[in-house]
Length: 415
Image (cartoon, rainbow, N blue to C red; front, side):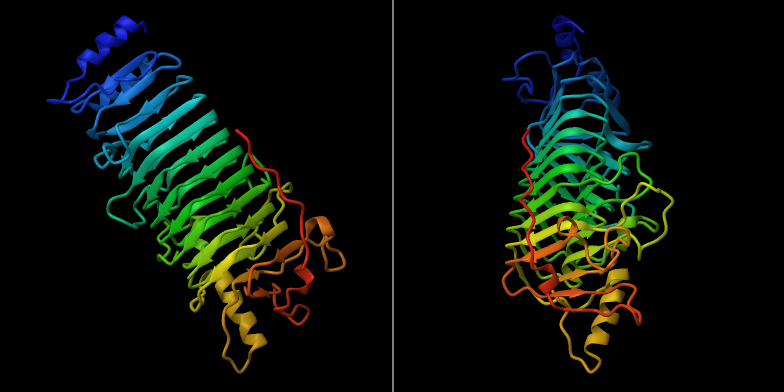
């Protein structure tokens, strides 16, 4: 669309009294969306914006009644501020998400998404994603009827999510799945089932975030039967992860529904993960838990690597007493502690590993150096190997000696 027709289109969208031009200061083609615009007018703007252009929303609340989509490269979608401009999907009648983006080199910033019945902002197959100062919120608080994901890049490459906030997702607030080269920094995740989740993703840096009042703070997962297999090389560092004790409200059947209420960091079948310089505290189940997929269920994906390996947890500050472990890991924890301390009392350790070993890589019951789980320099944090499946052949252990090792630091993600 020509710049002349862009201006004409912008003129068709009603201006709120005394509102400023949302395109002011924007270089290049810009379509203004002023308060009072209909869903149809907003979708037309997203269709007609030229490559490299901007769709600029004024301050105000925009009522959206069907899902929106964007498939133009190089576009910026911006508002007047995360709390000043709100796209409300509370009355959405059709569509599985709020806004679906399927194009490349996309920026979303300074805007809020509220009450989407499905995922709020989903980006599928995009190369070059920047999400800045964006708010996603389900205003009724934790509820299984809330949308699953807040900020949701999947099968994407070169992703930055920064200075944003997500509240109330029934799966994960910030979820990056099956992606490559990812930075998640300076965000706040609160009152979600999972605050921040990195799943089947390779090369991710998760740092300087606050995760609190979720069911689980930060999750690094590898799951079977997905198009992108066996992610690796995630760094979780310099985060504040505390008081993630909100009752799990995931809909029945969701894998995240198995996350124990009161989990700080959970590593599920994760590979090549470095967890360092975090402050992790006050979780009712566990501050840091590592688990294989084996105790969770069966799978048919022959390429799936179900065991956590090459994990390095070091130089973190862990505190608070866990006193109510729940879920499958919690049940295993209680059984193991009961065996270690049959006459009680006992305290749940800060760091737990289910103890399930890959029989291929550890035929003699011990991983080679490159695959070991290393735990070092975490103050007075204590540890338990839960020795799944906890039978006559496997006994729980609390000694850190087998994990007194290091791995080379993982390289940072540069975008």
